[in-house]
Amino acid sequence: MSRRELQFLDAQDEDDASSSQSGSPSASEDETGYPSSDDDSPAVCGKKGHCAGFIGARYFDCPNKPCYLCGQSGHSTMTCPFRIDPGHGCSAAPGSNPTDGVQWEVLRREQGAAGAAAPGLPPQRKRWQVESAVLRLHDRRVVCLEFHPRNQNIVLSGSKGGRIAVWDMEKVYERTVYRSINFWLTSALKFAPGSDGLACATCSYDSTVKIFDVETGAATTLHTATPREWRGPVEEDGSWITQMAMDVMQGGIVVAGDNKGMLYFCDPRHSSAFATMQAHKKGTKVQLERVQSVAGNPVDANLLLTAGNDYAARLLDLRVLGGKQEAGAEVPRAELASLQHSKVINAAYFSPITGRKILTTSQDNRLRVWDYVYTSDQEPDRMIVHSNNFNRYLTPFRAEWDPKDLTERLIVCGRYISEDFGGVALHPVDLLDASTGELVSELVDPNLTTISPVNKLHPNQELIVSGNSRSLFVWRPAPDGELVRDIGLTASNSISDQLSLAAAAGYTFFDADESETPKKKAKFATGAPKTDDAGESTKKKPPRKRKKDEEGP
Image (tube, rainbow, N blue to C red; front, side, top):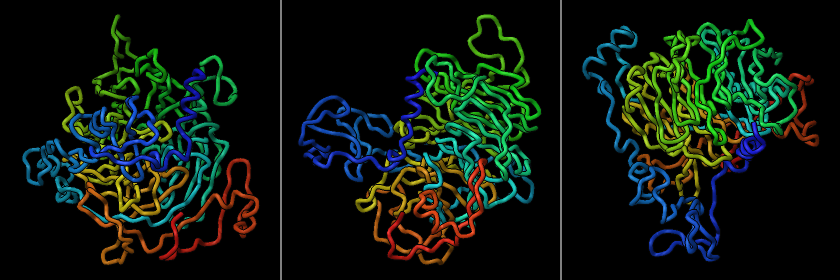
């Protein structure tokens, strides 16, 4: 990897940049509605007399550029029909009506009596609120999340600095942070299907694929793509390989993808990859060939889905992984379909129950849905316009399925462009219906003014964990009849039904960073066990409840 590429990767994560962008304080709106600049500073287009971006809590497009959200001309981001009416232009999926034809009947028969009432029903609209949080858990931004398969209260998170944290969401103040498993950005954390939760797989920008013990932090290296000692994030010869994405297939096989477009197939019983494959094309541009995501099919162990910076998601048949490529062929023999996009793809995933659907997240502000995996060589069944084209200082946005939704309709994705709630810029976490493109719920809290690009739905509970810069927040639906404190902020032109912004009267939180400072360490160290080289385990005194009139973190 070249110095230029490494500097880009390192620069794309300054933690302060996850907060809302703000424009020049001297900007004011002219008669056209666009902000004008008093200092004649050049705008995005290079012309003077106006500026673009966030002015306070509002986002303004450059008048000489198309809409930032949908990319079309004739309107601004604030008046974009896709923003005002989510799902605009989407055609509903066949079977989205509970009594609609053959698809409903097939789903009813497959799921039996227990699930007969669930398929086809639209996701339920709920109001969500923050239940608990751990602040500044990591040294750098949160990159990935994974729930423990057996202990429902445990969530694992990885950071850009390489740390891996194990946090108890119920006790809140108990967490373990491992510093020596990975030495650079932790790209992914995955448990094997049916795992007992004792061992978790991880891959990192330090070029390694590992399995580690969740309780002790002891790690075993499965593969090192650059077989030499780690010397830091900058390599002069440009040869350093970073592991970008990973998944664990049925049977425990770990598949990882790197920044050169290669896939590595690792068996936990061996110390190196037993097979490799060039999945995404090599290019001359920086990072063109990077693998952005790897996903195995939950039902068919022969199918693998990858996404890359070459604007393509690739559906692969692993049964012909070792087959010879035909002379002059530009695609590997294992490729069944190439799902073309107009920009870089952040992620591509199979639906979690049947594995029949495909969901992709692209930097062209589109979520694409294919309703049937074997028609993925055709145009997507649905393109949902959603704000996920981010700046380089953030973890990429990745829309994910709800793993417990039998209808395979509910998805979650963070939003880049903020909404103006009474002058406060907030970046909601969106729950969307993949079958219609409609917005189901938007998760907002007045204490969360920064962007949450990493979000994950719990596989068994009504719960969402969001990675917000260095912190984690737990969302749950507000209990029926429970009083929430309305702080009197209403979204201006909100894309939801003009819901007033409310925050829970109090939620449990723990500031993990306070225990890191020597001056405050004694205050929180009562009963805390000693730390070792593998990680830092802390058991603090019970957290306090936030008072109604207390300021947020």
